[in-house]
Image 1 (tube, one colour):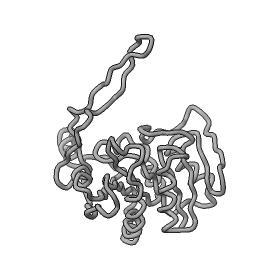
Image 2 (cartoon, helix red, strand yellow):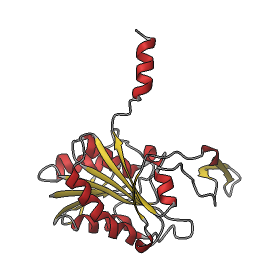
Image 3 (cartoon, rainbow, N blue to C red):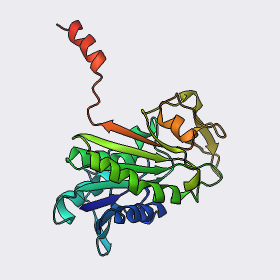
Length: 253
């Protein structure tokens, strides 16, 4: 099985090394193609107005001056001798749950693989403010291979990717796996953090209220992570709302 590994935190991110180790538990044929620089929050963007620069760092290790989506296309359509059998994107530093999936470059890497007809996983390791720079990488490292193996044995439908989030705890403290719905945060926590630079000019950060743990309804990825469970969420490329589709169909008959 040929596996393509990518991420959005960049080619030198520690989570990418963890992701490669996870991939090597499943296959010896592993290729790593990741962004030259941090691409967090770029979602499913493509680089269309600038050329893509490809730099080889070692055997089967490449950096692309572009987005995670660019990396997957570059790997599947140019670098690899044949299309990969699996794409694993991550391991992201921080959870990609709830609305994160709309912004995440990690999820987008797996999403692009699904567009190309390749089975794909997005892996993310949750952390707290206290261990932001040293998340519990071993939690993802120890639990991911078995989860991926079991899901692949079952099979992933076409146009679906699997989003996996690991809780902020040690590997032994994980309570289990929860197949969960995508959650939704309280958007009242979202705000603009206004500041001034040394010259008195204003600048801004988009931020969430600190010190508040995002809660989720039962059965969601947020609830799973808050309970120290690994969340596994299948995400579809087709975003059509079937219920409202029927309403609009009746409206325009």
